[in-house]
Image 1: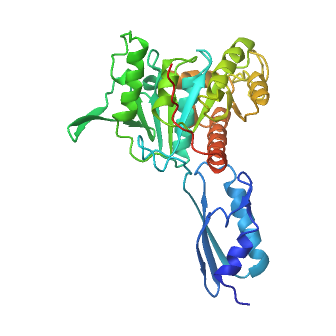
Image 2: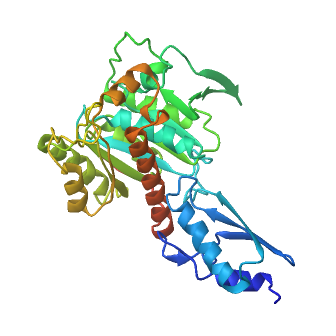
Length: 364
C-alpha cells in the first residue's frame, strides 16, 4: 500500500498537544515529512526543550502513524524544539524570547536559590538562559554560581559601553555583586537601584535567549515597577515558604502583578522548604513550616503550583559552595528539574493563549 505526505499529516492531525489542546499539525509542530518506499520520517518541534511530555508526544505520533502504515515500515521521528515567544518586535532585548520575573513577598524564603537552580535546570534541558540579579541590595547570585570574584567584560559598540555577561553552568549572568567588592555594602537610594537594573537591560549584550530570569528583591518596590515599565514581562513566578507569615507577604506580591495597571500573568507559585527530609531518613517528611501553604495560595488565586521543593541540608551546602543542587543527583535535583519543566510548560501555554504583556505606563 502506498502512502504520501498528506496521509502522514492526516494521521498526525489526530495527535494533540496535551497542554495547548490542539493537534500538532494545526499548531505547526510537524516539519520535514518525508515518505520513501520503506521509510517514513518527520520532525516534531516542541515548544520548549524542557517539555515534560516529550516522550508521550513521541509515542502518540508513532501510534498514530503505525495505524495506517503498519509495523513493517521503518519510522524515524526526530524530536526538536523552538521556544515560543510573543516578543518578536521587541525594541529592548530583541533576542530574548521570554522575560520571567521571580519574586517573593518576604526575604529568607530561598528565592535566589530557586532562581539559580531553575536557571541551571533550564540550561541543562538545552534552553538558552540568562539571569539578572536585580536584588541590588542583597545580591547572592555570584556566590551561588561560584563567581563572586569575577567581573564582566565591557566592550564598546558604536561609541557605547556594553556589558558582556559572565557565563557559568550554561547560564549568562549579570549582578551588582560583580561590580562591587563582596565585603562592601551597596548604599543606594531607590532611583539609583532602578538605574542599575535599567543598565543591565539596556546596556548588556544578552544575545539570543529562550528565557531571561529576573531575580527580584523581596517585597514590592521601585525595582519591580522599573522592570515592568522598562520591558514587557512574559510572566511572574512567586516563591514562598509554607508558613502563614510568608504566605501573607507572598499574597501581596502575587496581587501586585495581577493589578489591572500592571497585569503581568502569574505563571505559578513555588513552595520552597515545603518539608524537611533528613539525609538518614530520605523517605520521611517533616512539615516544620506548616503544610501546603504555597499550594493553598496557588489554589486561592487560580494559578498553577509549579513545585514543592524540600528543605534539605544539601541545598544550603550547594548554595554556599557555588555548585547548584540541581547539578547533583538525588531527590532535590529531580524536584528542581520538574520545576523547570513545569515553568517551561506554563510559558508555552501562556504564549499560546494570551496576548503580549504590554510595558506598564504608570504616572506615579
